[in-house]
Image 1 (cartoon, rainbow, N blue to C red):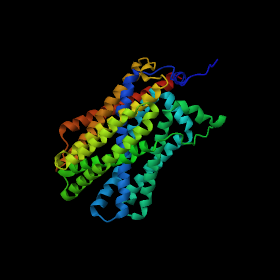
Image 2: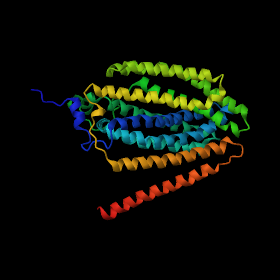
Image 3: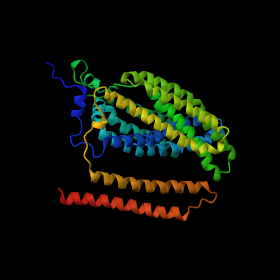
Image 4: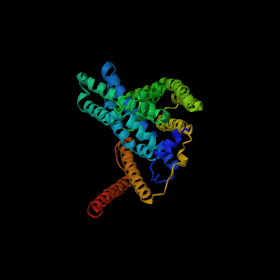
Length: 402
C-alpha cells in the first residue's frame, strides 16, 4: 500500500503551526498591492542605469548627456526605494507562502544568500558612479558593472520565484539521481519570456513614464523648455516602442508558463495591457498636458501584472489542492496594532516628503506652505515617538523578560 505523502499534504505540513496573524486573503491582497511599488522602483533603477550607460557611452547629444547625469543620480535613489518597498511584499510572502519561500531559498541557497551581496555591489557602484563618474568616461565601466549586478539580482529573484511555484519538482531538485545536493548553486527553474517581460521591458516602460513626469514636474522652475520637450518626447517614443514588445512578450510568457499551471487565460490581460499602453503613448502626442498621468497609468498596469503573477501562483498550488484561503490563522491584535501604526507613521512621513519635493520644484520661488510645515512637525513627532516605543520595548524585554 502506498503511504507516501502527496504534494498538497507536504505543503500543509510545512506551514507555520501558529498560523497567520490575520485573514490570509487580506494579506494576499496586500502582497499584490505592495509588490507594485517595489517592482516599479526596481525596474526604474534598471531603466535609469541603462540610459546612463547609453548616454555616457555615445557622448554625442548634449541633451542625452544632461539626461544621463540625471539618470545616474536617479539610479541609486530608485534602487534604495526598491529595496525599502520590497520589505513589505517579502514579509507578506513569508507569512502566507512560507513553505514555498523557504524551500526555494534552501534549494537555491548559495544564490539567495549571494543576492544580498550582489545588490550591495550594484548599489555601491551606482552610487560611486553618480558621485565620481558623471564627468569622466573612463569610469563608465563602473556603471556597466552596476547594471550587470542589478540585472543579475533580478535574475536570482526570478529563479527563486520559479522554483517556489513548482513544489512537485522539489524532491527531484533536492535529490537528483537519488543523491542529495545541498550546494544550492543550480538555477533550477526559469522562464526567459517572463524574465524579459519583468525586467528589461518593464525597465523601459518605468523609465518612459518617469521621463514624462520629469518633463511636467520641472516645467515650473526650469529655464530649459527645449530640453524638457526633448525629454517628454523621448519618453513617449520609448514607451511607444516598448509597449508592443511588452504585449508580445507577455503573450509568450502566458503561452510558455500558463499551460503548465492550467492558466493560459492570463495571455488576454497581458496582451491587452501592452496594447493599452501603446494607445496611451499615442494619445499623449496630442495631449502633452496629461503627461504626468503616465505614472498613474503605469502603476495601474503594474497592478494588472501583479494580479496575473499571483493568479499563476494560485493556479500552480491549486493543482495539489492547496489554497491560501485554507491557511490557518488566528487574529493577533498586537501584530495588527504594530503594523497599523507603523503604516500610519510611514504614510505621514512619505506624504510630507512628497509634498515638500513637489512644492520646492513646482513653484518658481520654491516656497513650502505652512500646512505642509505643520504636517512635517506632526510626522516627525510621530516617527520619534515610534522609535522611542520600540526602544522601550527592547529595553523592557532585555531587562525583565530574560
